[in-house]
Length: 102
Image (cartoon, rainbow, N blue to C red; front, side, top):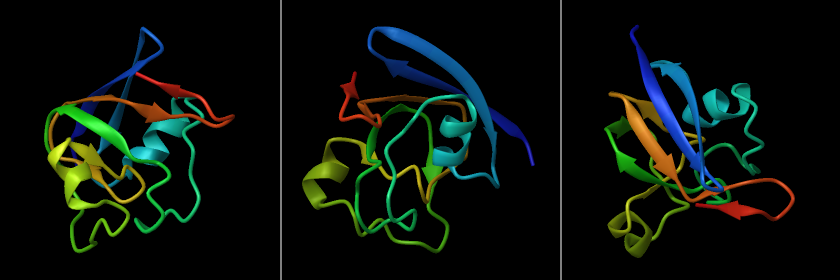
């Protein structure tokens, strides 16, 4: 499966990483050293939600139950159950320790 470039915007900085199409985005972000908040890891709690600025993701057969319609309209996604289908740009990433960085 191809790797897709992922650009993560945090606190005015950019972090670049990549993810294959069979790797959850949350796992790719944490592998890159970004301490993204997580809890359920199955799309229900919404704790890890971040904004998809550019690119395309899929949840495959899963449903993002942790997102409301207003979240989806704002471009928010759940990286714990999302897979990259193209190069991505993400922001509004919730970090451990209560930090929220844009």
